[in-house]
Amino acid sequence: MQVTATKIISVQAAVIPVTVSVTPRDYVGVPVTCTIGWSPVRPYAHQITFDWGDGAVDVIPGQYGSSITRDHVYASYGNFTITGLVTDQYANYGEAEAPIQIAPPDIKRISLTGNSSSLPTKKTFIEVSSKS
Image 1 (cartoon, helix red, strand yellow):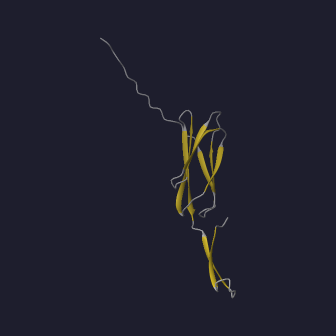
Image 2: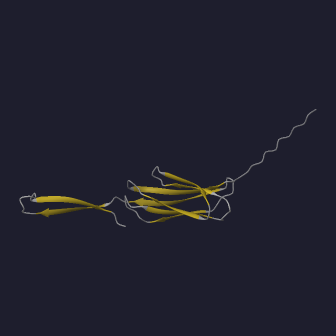
Image 3: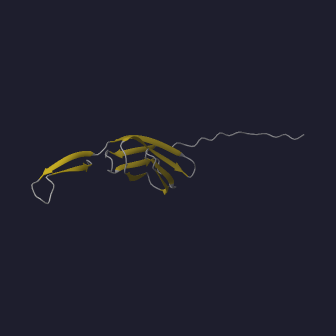
């Protein structure tokens, strides 16, 4: 008679404490600066994922240290959630989120009136500016 035994072991990856901080540049076309930090600092590489919440994702492999900073420019306005994910070679991971609101750029109308024959009598310009 042959006896077999099966032992099931559940393994849960350790969670890496992660922080996401955002420099508030909240207008379309102006770079948003985001820093993802993690601890504890270990002597092996981490893969860092920036999910910008607008469909763009940046994956940076092989990072040592305790933080990394990236810039992102939003093409449209709205409410977004930036998610930072940190994983290491042993499947330890952690993630954090930071909400951000991106506003449309300021639009100003400028009207000029002239009496020169080479210029129309009235011309309207639109100035689009982002506060930075």
